[in-house]
Image 1 (cartoon, rainbow, N blue to C red):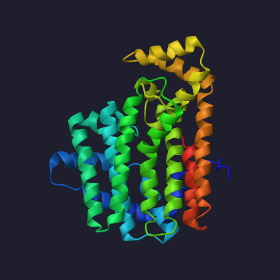
Image 2: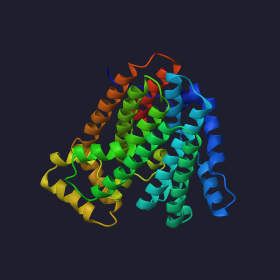
Image 3: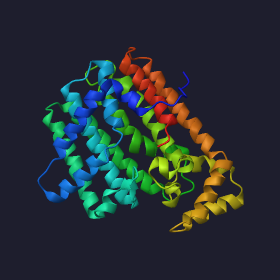
Image 4: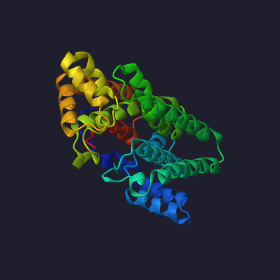
Length: 327
């Protein structure tokens, strides 16, 4: 079944679980609350720039598509978002990023030391949240996921500056770095249910499409929309699918231009623009779009095993949202 192509607003996807999502945000604020001033200041910043809550949405929609949403799922969704936030904070610190969602990153607003420790704090709060549920299976799933994500981050570090990084290498990296958490979010929404495995596989394919689209936005998006500077991945020497797909089609001069950018500690805007143009002209953008659509189709196929419901339809719309989003 081909993926949908009509853009879908995230708000419409979240509508079936809007009330529960509000409860998740309240739970997040409760879980990270502390009297320690420095942590409280960072928490206030994080809550102020409330993210899209996409992963908690998947927990809740998966639960609703399976057995129905309970208070346990609200707490699970909060734990998933805490893990996601911790990962973002660590990523921004590793990459020395100054903006996230158009707002200052924790490392930019406070310090890199604070960001590392704050990421650890959020991870630990997530584990406490899972342990407090007094059920082993969610802890087992999320422990596996966080381990996979760590390996994915190491794979990304290994990929810097390496122009012979293959599509298979890239798939392994984003499978661990991004798809694992999105898959885990869908899986914990349907534990002890016959739909657990299809939803886990749905999340895995959805996560692959999500990351490919995210990497595409670095080549096609604008800072006003994405909240991040255009060409940031190239500026940080990150090798992603659009570049990987374009390299075999480059002529020697274009390959040299790309190598020169990777060899420059701080590439200029002109260098970034030139390589983006090369990637576009050599088919990298289109190849990545085709690959994202492939994974979107896989995700939709898994939903054929889930009974039709409002939540099922929202999960299907989430596939369209992922591949058509602009930020």
